Image (cartoon, rainbow, N blue to C red; front, top):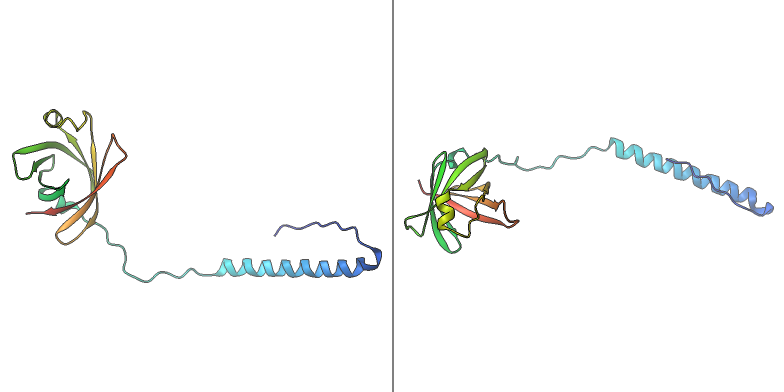
Length: 161
C-alpha cells in the first residue's frame, strides 16, 4: 500500500490529539488494507458445476446431401470433398462452388466462373466462409459470411442422407 504524507498546520493545543487520532486512523487503514489483500490472495475461486462444453464433431458433415431454407426458398446442396452444387427449389443446377476446409467445422465456398456469370449478385472473386456453430440430432446451424460485406447470415441446414 502506498504511504500517504499529510501536512497539517495545526493549533498547538490540538496538535497532539490530532496527530494521535490521525496516526491511529492511518494505522487502522493500513491493517485493514493488508487484511483485505491477504484474504483476496488466498481466496479460492469455486468451479462452476455443470456439463463440460461439447466439442463439435463436423467430420460427418463434410460430404453428403443437405437441405436448407434460404430467402424463403428450399435449397438442396450436394457436397463432395472438393465441390458443392446447389439446386434452388429442386430445379436444375443453381450454383457450383469449390470447397476448401479450413478446420473441422469451417470451410470456404468459392463460386466457379459459370456461377458468377449466372448470378450477377455474386461478385467475381467472392469467397463465402461457412462456420458450423451448432449441431443437433438431424440439423446444424451455420454462420455464413462473405469477403465483400460485413453481413453474416445464420442458416439452419438438415442432412438428407
